[in-house]
Image (cartoon, rainbow, N blue to C red; front, side, top):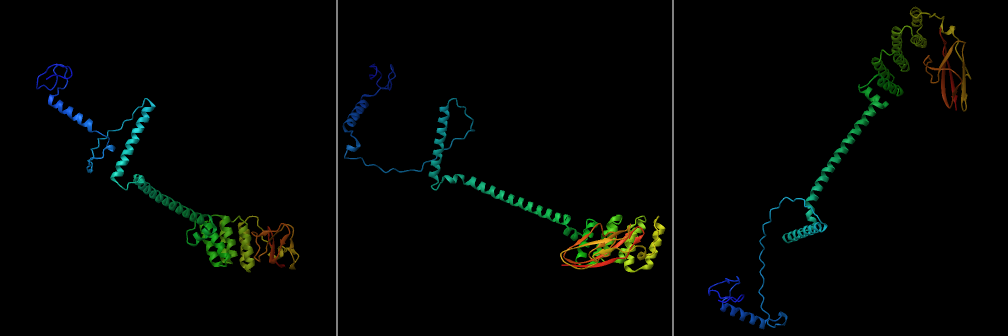
Length: 363
C-alpha cells in the first residue's frame, strides 16, 4: 500500500506508514470518502433556501443528574501580585455566585432573594425578643429599687414617717415618739400625747435637756402629776440645776398646792447651796404691768411690759401659764388681727410674781 504522504510502499495490511508514521487509507475507503465529499458538496445549500426542510424530532429533556460537588477545600488566602489578577478573581467569584443562585432558582421556583436572609432575620427577631425581655427586667428592677428607696426616705426622713414608726412601735429613737406626741397634742389627744412623751423619755432618760422638755410637754398635755414626777426626778438627779425647781414651784402655785410648795422651798434651801427662801411669791415680787391694759383695737397693737429692777418678764399670748421656758420680754410686743390672751410674770433669783392676764381683741 502506497503512502499518500511520502509515496513509499508499505505492507497491504499496514495501518500506518513505516517511514513517516502517517495513517494509511485503503483504496476502497478512500474512494468512498471521495464520493461522500462530492455528494455533500453538490447538495449542500443553506437551510433557508432549501424548500424541503428536514423533519426535526422533538427534544426530550431528561432530568439532569447533578454532578457530585467537589469536596471543598479549606480556603486559603491568595496573594495577588497584580490588580488585574484580583479583579479576575472577583469576577470569577461573582460568576460562581450567579450560577449558584440560578441553580437554586431552578430547584426552588418560589425562591426569593429575601429568603436567603430568613434565617438571619429569625435570629435577629429572637435576639430582639431576648433583648426586650432583658430591657423589661432591668426597668422592673429599677422601678422596685426606686420604690424601696422612696419608702425608706419617707419612713426615715419625714415627720410622717417618724409618726408611723412610733405608732407601730418601730421608733428609731426618742425623737420619733416626741414627734408623734406633738402631732397627737395638736389633734387634741392629750392623754395619748402624754403616753408618747413618756415613751420618748424612756429612750433618752439620761439627757437632762430632753427630760426637762418632756416635763414641760406633760404640762402642755395637762398631765400635771406626770410633770411633777418628772421635775422631782430631775431635782433628784441634778440637784444643782435651778430650772426644775423653778418650773415645779410655778406648777405648784398654779395648782394651789401651798403645802407642797413650802416643802419644795425647804428642800431646795437644803440641797441647793446659796438659795434663800423668799417670803411669799406674791409679796416678794410685784407682778409686771402691761400697757395698754387690754381692750379692742384696730390694725395692730404694741404692748409694753415693765417689772421691778432685777426681774425678768416671761409671757405667753395663747393663754398658757408663763414659765422660764416661755418667751422672755425684750421689747414691745406687736400683735395683729385676732384675739389674744396675754399672760406675764416677773422672775428673780429669789422667786417669781403672780401671773398677770390681759385680753386683746384686734380687728
